[in-house]
Image (tube, rainbow, N blue to C red; front, top):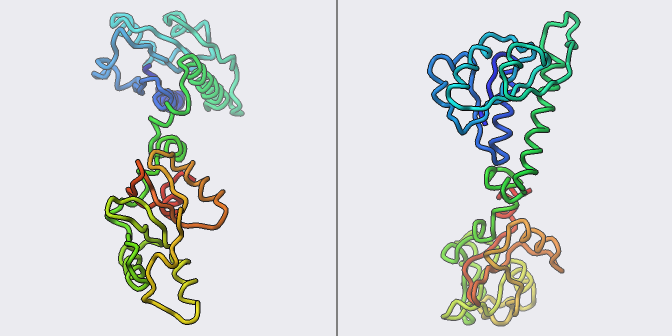
Amino acid sequence: MICCGIGKSGHIANKTAATLASTGTPSFFLHAAEAVHGDLGMVTDKDIVLLYTHSGETDELVRLFPSFKSSGARTILITGRPGSTAARLSDLVLDTGVREEACPNNLAPTTSTTVMLALSDALAIAVMESRGFGKDDFAKYHPAGALGKRLLLTVENVMRPLTETATATMHDTVLQVMKGIATAGVGAACVLNEQHELLGFVTEGDLRRHLLKTPINIEATVDEFMTKNPGTIEPELLAIEALEVFQNYPVKIGELPVVRGGKVVGLLMLKDLMRSGIV
C-alpha cells in the first residue's frame, strides 16, 4: 500500500503509511511532488495507491494518475469532492462527506484532515481484522515497545547466566557465600552439586537472619541455613508471566533460580525484570 499526498493531507497519508506498516501491511509514503522526479519508480502493478486530496483538484496528485495507470497500480482516493477530477480518475473513491472546514475562513485544512485521519484508521483496523492480525503479530513489529516485550521477552532473555551469578556447594561457609554474592553483585546464591542440579538456595536475607543468631558463626556451612526445595522458574516462561510469579509468591522474594531439564542455567532477579521494559 502506497500512501500519497501533499501538504496537510500529505501528513495524514504519511501517518497512515506508518499505521499500516506497523499493523502488518507493507506500506510507505510517496510525496506527490517528489513522485514526478523519479519516485514513481517505487510504484508497481502489485501496489494500491491511496491518495489524499480534499478538493480532488490538487495538481500534484491529478497529474500522477496516468503514471499509476501505466504501471498497473490501482488507486483509491480519499476526498471531500466525489465529483472532482481526481475522483473521476480513481478506481475507488471514499467520500469523507466534509464540505466545509472548521476554519472560520473555510480555508485551513481542519475538519477534512480530521475525518481523513479517522477514516484511515478505520481502514487500517478493517485490514487488520481481515488479515487476522493479532497481538503476537503486532509484537513482531514492535519489539522495543512495552507490548512487544510482554509478548516476546522470555526469562532467558532477562536472566543472568550461571557464569555471572553466585553459586555455592553444600560445604561452603557463610563467609564464602557472602563473598560470592558480593562479587557477583546479585542477591542470592544457588547451591549446586557437580551436575549443576539445585540443592538449595541462599538469599541475603537468609545470611542476615543467620548472622543475627547468637552466637554468630561465620564458619557454618551452607546446608545449615539454605532454603531446601526452593521455588524455581523456567527459561521459556514469558517475562511478564515471571513478574506475576514474583508478585504472587507466598513471601517477598527478589531472585529465583532458573532451571532447565533439572539443571540451573541462571538467576532471575526481580530488579532485572523491572528494568526490562515490560511494565
